[in-house]
Length: 76
Image (cartoon, rainbow, N blue to C red; front, top):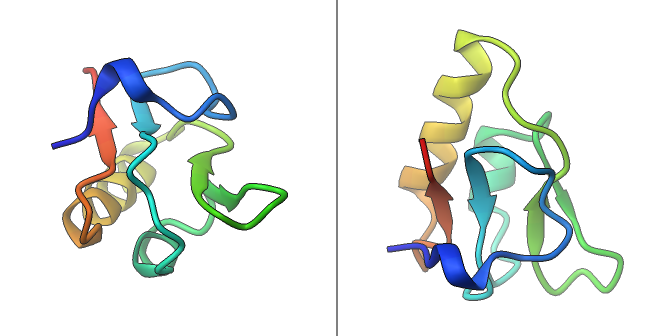
């Protein structure tokens, strides 16, 4: 389960976030490439923007389910 106290600093403010347990496996990027980006060092991903509609909310939820380290969280 993602740790809300260990969010990646690059996350755009909002209910969706990636925490510090992320490894760059690409699983989440396959589900929500419009919402997630690799950090400059390519050692983790982060939410570069929050979902803007129902389709993007569903993509974020799919990314969370796909994450093998459970690094994606939702404070909503």
